[in-house]
Image 1: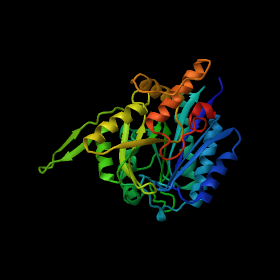
Image 2: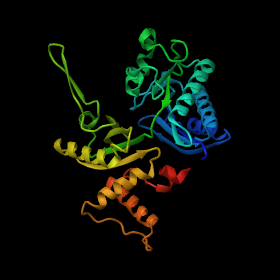
Image 3: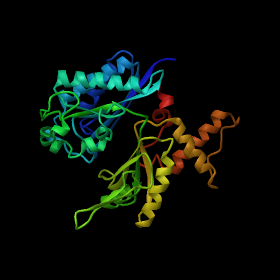
Image 4: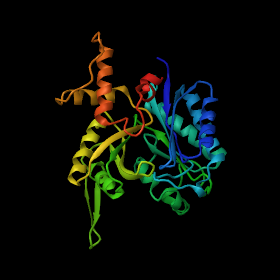
Length: 344
């Protein structure tokens, strides 16, 4: 079986297309790597890039793109809706075929060692590559974001996994690791009330909602969905609020489950859900799960292809998922460009 690793670096630039193109070109120049998607977002001021290839080639492409981002992005001037720690914010390595999670942990650590030594960027390890349990969660590492990184590095508790605890004003810090396939999934609301979106996020995300009482004690109510991270954001170009979600294990909580849960919580607040979007790529299985769910919900579904082949049935299910999840509300959803199996 051919060895294939996926890498999905997130860069803190979503507006300057020249910078985004140069970062993409740095990846394409590495032999043994295929660039699958480049998705900038102006409101998040962030770009999600996806590429696959042989393990060592993917590692080298991740370094090349990080080096280019360090040259072109200045975090001192960066503003955006999405939490971030550095110019190259997070670099996950994901096993696709012929490689194990431990192989990807090794790649992340090799990448981190090189970035720290050659680019002087502090590196933190997360998820399966984390060396301590409190650094497993990306949100924990990102807490305080770039604006508080200088102070964070002075705390010995937050000594980087690689590199010196010295603040790099231009590039910030980078988080890298190995993880299961993550689906970046945003649900659109018929309101521009960011607070409403965030309240929904608190109710559904696994970590839940923490309330601080007058006596200083805290109470946490867990959210309704497992393997879900979420927050509320404002998408200015469409003047709508979104519940921005990371599905860290779609086999437990797939997109359609998150979508229906957001609909339920939104309704309780008097807010309508209008659609959703996938950022980056999605496994075919996740859309088939959604299609099968909606196909049994007594609602009309697209007609299967003429010969009733298995592929025809699958295509109908995928079209059902696209329609029922409203995946084309903001931008047209083309399965050929968004499903990872079709891209590799």
